[in-house]
Length: 505
Image (cartoon, rainbow, N blue to C red; front, side, top):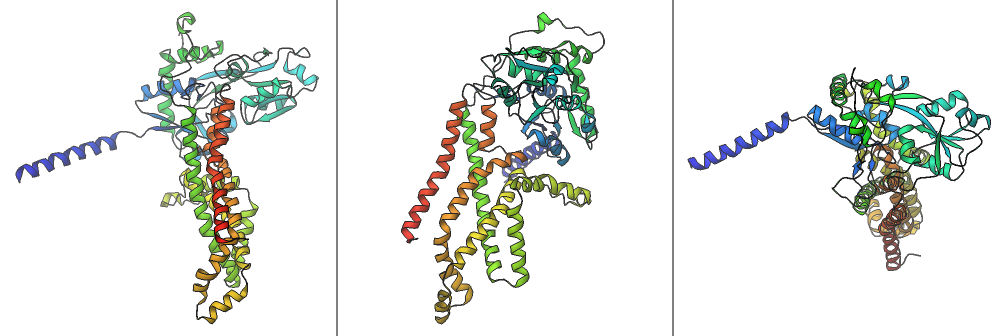
């Protein structure tokens, strides 16, 4: 008995010590960035699909200095600042320029990179060799939204076109859709010259160097100045030790302007620092594996969202058909409202808007933050939206059943609820089955919009992979299309089988 008690005491002591150690260990810092077309900051290696980039190396160096693990979390570039405000990310490091507008909303650390803007044109361009020259001939310049380049083009009155990604402007330049591209020099080096992203160098050339300058820095929430201080110290050590210079030389993005960020009197021998560029890690992860992970996420979102839509849609349809007047009006308002707003807007409101509302009213201080997991917000948004369409399908199907069915059931002594459940609904289901199947297939494809709230489903995974590998573009596209077909085509066969079996039509 004593031995048993002693064993229990030892085991209990072990688990208590282990839980205490885990509780004392700080949680990993969540790093927000967008890996879609993100070279040379963070992107997938063309061959083994591991995450690489100069900011990946910087994050690893910061881990060593902070003594704390850093975890990358895929985030849509346009919503990086919203993630900081929401609090589901700790810091942003994604080639983020320090601008007065952003400084109003976030705290920036000391700069870790000094960039210049680079104008890129085709090799055969003879009409101009400066940005002002491009303006004179009324040429069109491609750039990214909310960047130093876009602000400069607007200030100078240069005709320009805004793009969401870094790859597309150079593709349009090569196709003669644009006359030039103006982006940060690191981007130009990796997309307009020979690199792992563009293994065959495009026929481009750099002109009008040093058009504008700026700095990249790490951004944190204004509510977390302590983290900003820790990152400042860690960045200082990385720079002072020469690790930052080594990383920049490795990725071929060192330029003389980096000297202004170095500690006073520091000097680095370029011959010693400049080595063979590393682009791949030893750990391999095939694009098929990543696409399958995205497909599983798509299936999960579709199944749960459609289950919510079916249950809620049936409830709304019956409320509109048989409820009292106020209930019927509410059901109608629901249908018209959710059919009338874009699902993209609904997702952004659920994930970013609700927590902001709770914060503005002080509810978060009372424990009502209304902040939800990204997958939960995606399921809720898609479910609420599709419930409106399902409700109209069910209403039409139920209304198509002759009134004589109700009267016959009543003559047999069946109540209204029992008649609806045993007689009306089974017959209506045969009518609504085909449009339900169409909605389910449509939902499979509409899951692609949830990437706006940082959910990486099949479509987003495809975009990340294709913008990181030009060699496997066709293969990845075909594999993605095959996965969508594998998931959706069987639904059509199942629907037709059930229609034939139940004698629909």
